[in-house]
Length: 219
Image (cartoon, rainbow, N blue to C red; front, top):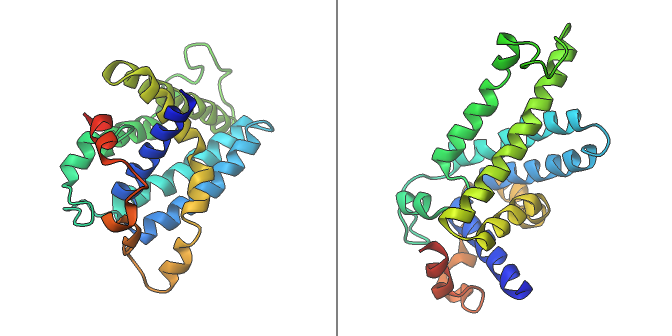
């Protein structure tokens, strides 16, 4: 059972990398995002407010900017897949879902403008510092809620294992991305805007991934 769980985790990670991380700029931004997420993880036990601010203002913005602005949204010749196909089989948040999540994050501070007490949960903010700390608390809820919502959603549209595997992937992505994309900034400085994808060639991936398993995963 554990072996199957780890295999499904590997498949989700591999699909995410090969389908959504062609741009060296995107990979480099993921490297920055991973570093800042690890900082946020540590700071979660020291000051969760600081953790939320770093996590959203640095980690998430750099991570999603790479996907929205630098990743190709055209036909994927390496994987022979259309952008629409990749969006359809995406296990977690595809670009459309990310737009909704990021919109909720960006608009959430307005709640404190309309009701500084947030329905009686907060003491009305009296300074910019108070406001930002309360916003950060809301962002903690938005982040945790987004993770739990999609996990439970996957329980119903896929199965419990897929949801739990995806949640594990998201929580461990900073560690994985740090190792996977550590060479991207140097490649970018050499003028390599796109990953040549040599490791994605079928002759290089034989034995690494089981395509029938992939079809079952995305069914």
